[in-house]
Length: 607
Image 1 (cartoon, rainbow, N blue to C red):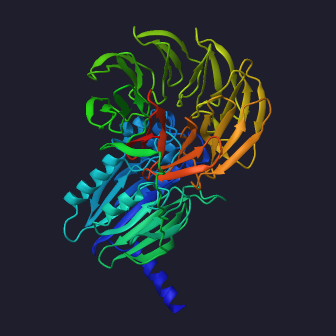
Image 2: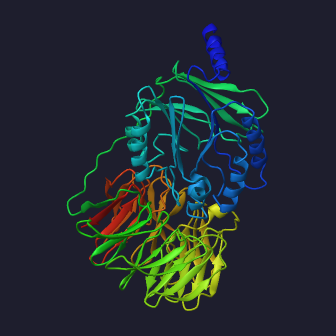
Image 3: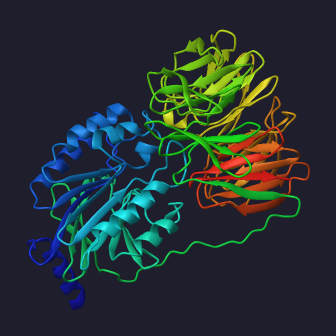
């Protein structure tokens, strides 16, 4: 007992130490989730006033500033954080990245970057964005940011200096490329890794690096506050304090740098492609890839996180050409005739010459494009921000537009017969007349919460019905002609946004959040036909499900490919393509299947 009281006394004294002796003091705000007028807004203003009265060396805001990442919400909290009188460093969280009105651009416009580095005494503090970017997924550090991290620390960390690593996510399994991240950090003397995200307090260890999760602004029950951290570089101790607004700091953790905690290990699995299948990597980019792959008879077309649209040879992966935009790319390039049409998140539709990659023509929109377009009959059907448009590709001519959408479109539409059917992040699924863009019908699930929208799912469309899944974890069938709901099945399958269909349209395939593939009838009544465990475990990647040539292809949040026999419903094999999310599948005229991974690779699958 005496030892414990002595330990707590030492910890309390640490906060009162002055800067001599190599003591660094930080205030940490995380997971504040402010929207204009909510309770958190007022409490954040109180926290800012308290922090300004302290002698901290710097303030860090480590993600989830807002709820939906809208421009209004970001500008509102920017105005509050600008009132901090100490040096301030800010990175976004998943709520700024996943549902961003500006496709992650406004954050950078307001704060200058989505990463930071600064020094206090002999401590280098480095923080980076870790997604997930514009769709449900695990945390992910962009490839170019990993390169920046290594080169920056090489240049800044001199003998006697140490490093504090900062992200919104922990360096655990929910950051898909945390192994690559940790491998870089282990080259330097890291004192700890700090994160938020989970609205809880926790200490852990990954490969010898200590990690600390800190509180949210609102911990429930009227408990509003922030985190204070003291790093004693001379004595090699770290002290973490819970600072409830209006109360004295309370010691949560005190630990020696490099002290051993509970270790976290990820299971390592081995897998082999069976005879008759060929799976090989075609592209390894120097940046992350968030787009699906456009294909023609010679090339693959994709966009990366540095804003480049690239054309590469289908066989060798050799670069044919590249075109630079001003923001990360999230939409699959559409290929039609002699053009590649690129929807960009810097608010343009860009027509590129397919042979040279040179700009042919462009259209400036009112907001970013993050949706995949579909070309049918020489017409591009393209969702955008608060709009859906039809374009004559050859003549660069807008044929019609539908502007009664209250948020952005993300997934590819289904163009079939006289209808264009698509979802948006404004809670609605819509059917438009393909000829003139007039509204046939619109449907929603009875909720007014945008985050439950069918915004990132490609519907299954048959001659009579439309089937969708959404983040509300419900499968719904709708009459294609009238828009009347036929059935809505909420069960233990926990579907989300990953959907596909059989070739004959009689079966809809949905990937569940338990890593299963469930097959359902697309008929008048709900009927589960069969289910198979894909071996993915917990799963939420919105990757489409593809049936092709008798096999069903599924991709996981962790880069695993699963192939199921469509006739026998048996899992044929799984194969680890990488560690990050599979973006989707696309097929060329020869039946070769291509898929991209967020970590910057493109794979070809053939049998």
